[in-house]
Image (cartoon, rainbow, N blue to C red; front, side):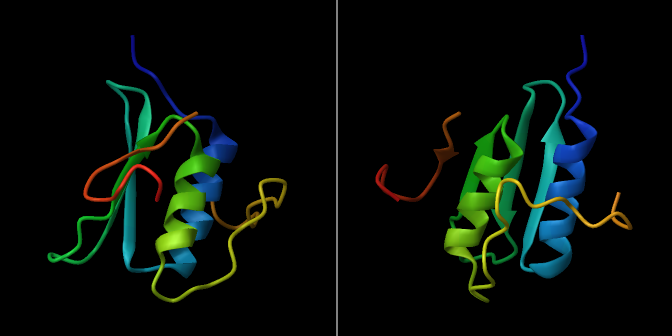
Length: 93
């Protein structure tokens, strides 16, 4: 069975990435999680979670441009269609 993200979750991720070009994300349909990482070969920033808001919060905290994070109840722009596992960071990050 293929796991797909909710359309609103994909729209929120897309809206965030449009404002934070140093990040990328994809939905892993096999494991049913969002996988996000920074576009820097020297960076170890990576997270995965089935919850879009969790990975958006992770990217917001670790973004170099320090744009304000999107509020969980903030809708994604109409024009743009659990626990975080991280690698390379201490568990408290």
